[in-house]
Structures are given as C-alpha cells and as structure tokens.
Image 1: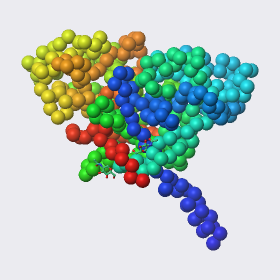
Image 2: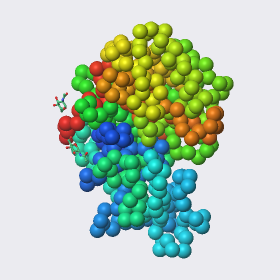
Image 3: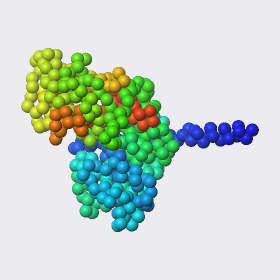
Image 4: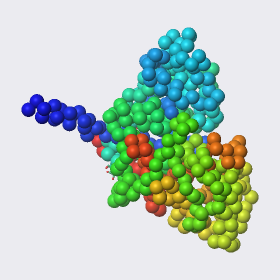
Length: 420
Ligand SMILES: *[C@@H]1O[C@H](CO)[C@@H](O)[C@H](O)[C@H]1NC(C)=O
Ligand SMILES: *[C@@H]1O[C@H](CO)[C@@H](O)[C@H](O)[C@H]1NC(C)=O
C-alpha cells in the first residue's frame, strides 16, 4: 500500500508540466538593422541572438536588482562562454578582490562585439502562455539576466535596433532564455521560432518550452507535424551557437562543385545576427558562379543589374525575372542536411529586392576569413533565410526540426488575440 502511494506521488511529481503551458512572445523584425526583437518586461525589447549564451539588459534607473553572489555556481555558468576579446574575470577567480561578492559577467553586443561588465541579477520575463493557437494568459517567468549600467557603456547598444535594451540569447546553454523558461516553468527544453519578414506581414513568434503544436491560420494544418529533422552538432570549440551539418549545396537538384571537405570544415551555424546567409569564400565563389550559370540557362533573357549594395554581388533587373507565388522563379537553392532532409529555398528565400526594380542573390561572402579557415563555419544561415520556416530547437533530443511554410502562409499570421 505504502509502495503504491509512493508510486502515485512520484507520478504526480513527474508530470508537473501537465498544466504549465508554453510561453509565447511576438518577434518583430527591425527594418533598419534586420535584427529581431522580443518584448521582455516593462516595455523593454531585447534582440534575439540564436548564438547568445546569456540574457542581458541595461539596468533600470532607481531599480536595485537582487544580485547573485560571485560564489554561486550560476555565476560560474554565466562566465562559461566568454566572448573573444572580452575581459572575463582576469584573475581566473569569479570573486576577484573588488567584487564585493557581486557576480560580474561580461555580456557582449552580438553585432559589434563590444562588451561591458554587468551584474548577474534576478529579474522577470513577462509574456503570455499559449496553446499553440493564441495567447492564453499573462505569465511572469523568473529569470536571471546581466544588468549593465549604460553610463560608461553607451557603445554596448550600438547598431542594435532603436529602443532595444539588451539581448536575449537563445543558445542551448543554461542561462540562455530557452533553458531558463524551461527551468522556471517546468517545461521541456525545446522552443519554436517562426521569423517573419516584418513590415506589413506582422510579427513572427517564438514559443519557449514547447516543440509544438503551432497553428498560424485557422483551418490550416498543424505545422510541427511536418518537420524534417537534422542533428544539432556539438562542437568542440566551445561555441554556444547551434551547429548543423550540411552535406552539399544543390542548385535545382544539382550539387554545386565545392573543394573537397569544404562544408565539413567548420560546419554550418544558424545565426540571427546576420541578415543574409554568409558563405566562406571557398564555398561562396563556386556557389555564386554556379548560380549565375544555372540562372542564365533557365532564364536566358534575364538581364544583370548593377548592385546597389556592396556585399550583394549578383543582381538582376527584376522585370526580366519570372515571378510566382514563391518569389522569383530562379534556380532553387537547397542545403542537403545530415539526416537526409533538405532545406530548400525558392526565390522568396534566395532573392531580395534591394531597391525597386533590382533583385539580388541574398548570399554574402564571409569577411575577414581566409580560404578554408577551419575556425570559421562554411555556412552561416542568416535571418532572411530562416524567415517563414518553422524551426524547432529540441535541446533534449539535440536536433533541429525545420519546415518551410506553404505559399500564402507566413509566420506573421499567428493569431495574437488572447483567448484566456
Ligand atoms: C499578452 O497578450 C495580449 C493579447 O494579445 C497582449 O495585449 C499583451 O500585450 C500580451 N502580453 C505580453 C506581456 O506580451
Ligand atoms: C483569432 O482568435 C480569436 C480567438 O480564438 C478568434 O475569435 C478569431 O476569429 C481569430 N482570428 C482569425 C483571423 O482567425
């Protein structure tokens, strides 16, 4: 009898998540920087950084947050992923002589790389729960974030969207937002990301503590049923970013000829810090040449245009490209992923209208990286190429699920009318 009771108790304790709902936030694209932001609390917006290991905000004036002690294990965790060039605790101890027992961390700006000291403190993340269709009710999620006094550190917000007050790291590490929400709300360590192109399309969504369901329009199917999976690769370099393995790049189903092992060298990373996908030079140059050739074969009358943007090297007069529901009808680009799936991009994901009448290939050569430099990833999938894909980051099963939304459906279609 006692045994049964214990068993029943264990069962109850083992299913604490049965009532907790996942946590939803709208994700807004900033037109100027092409970065994505989420509301955090009290009107503060934070920039999403898929490779960021921490959450940090500027300190609110007259607000004295509860600061963690430098002796706490959490402090050690927070200093576990120092950004190259940032001064982490110089003495190697997390309690250097002048620390006054406060936990100091060095958050960084993911765009400029500048960093500044901040206090690791308790805070709250205010959002709504969701059933996958609508917001249900407001929640205040306990979280730990670094708070940086802007005074001497004005540069820390440089090049971030106007009005943003910090960064929400989404990496797979203990103090990034996904693990914190999962821990505080007792939810699975998974999250969904559906980025919208912004502007007239409305905000996209992020759902923490859930691998699904996700509905975007009434009477439409549930999208996480259709995901294709690829393993999230653990790198030895200690980078908190999400690495995946790309086997080959195809243009209209024909593999682009790349130097041997080019893709295996450095791997591929998902990164919302860069607007367009970056390719390392040894991958970019053959890819660009192959795309130009494939396009000329498919659309012989296409007229090339001068690029209005330095980084975008291959542009066309838009009115010479056929156009369809899935964007310009240019050769499709597919990343053949480990696991057999294919991340396929039609014109709406591969071409960008840089100015009226000019459409450019939205892939960019990585700068400051040498040919085949193994310390740089071969492919850095940027925000533009993630838009209108449902992405499921499953930190428990260590895999990424991806699914391109059908034409007519957008990440901006999520229904933000509350039902609770
Ligand atoms: C929760 O959802 C309601 C309804 O959409 C919205 O007005 C409110 O701003 C949301 N709250 C947060 C914190 O996002
Ligand atoms: C959005 O959700 C609300 C609440 O369920 C519903 O009444 C409304 O019809 C939905 N809007 C659309 C466009 O589906």
